Length: 275
Image 1: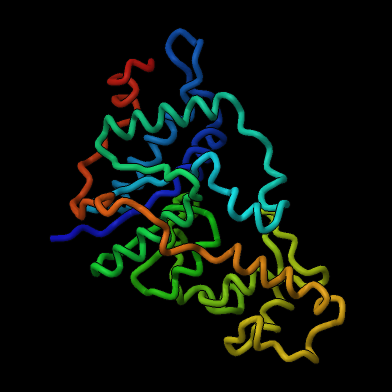
Image 2: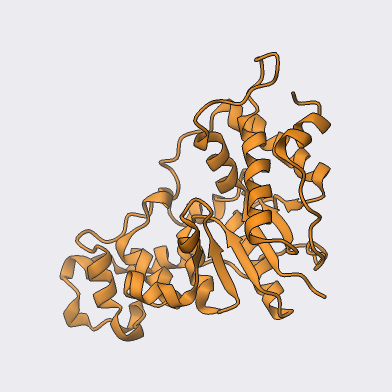
């Protein structure tokens, strides 16, 4: 039987691990910070036990040059993000080694952002009839929720709020999942340094997109002159926000078989001689 699929936003989970523990986790001699790799493996194991037993688990990381294509359309794209801490960079390499050790498949596709790779893998899996969960906090994935077989999983929330599906989007935001790129282009996305239109917040954006409208269908008399003057930029932002579901990837990334139960983080670090 083909297993359901859990796609994991690798950099999201690593950042959560690195910054989310109250105390640093170090090697026994106190010389090396192991918080990133310990936290990542512990959080992934917990997610498997609680939400994905019998699932295939696949982790996707942003490539170092992944944002270049979108930055070519708008030089401000993600320009506000600080350089990662050295310890975080070291942890990324250790996490990949830990994944290899535990049999969890992963990819960092050169020139690609993780969200495009995840979107492509999700579409592939759905074409095979597989249910897909995406472990992330990135709202750009909302646009994939037009398919009822796709859910977003945020294990940082209370249990009853961890899954987001397409039916949640209209009551929560006032737009449909397929309108998400239009909605974000209007109101902006601080996480990616997309400015949005001055004077348009979430309520105004939802009003302009009422009844399933797209940017092209908004009546001209509902737009202020200052908004109209910025419209070409808004259309550009929408294209940047859209996920690429046809990213060129190897054909054999997914196995369709369940991932074996993951060992504890302590066992992983012991096996890798990281204590």
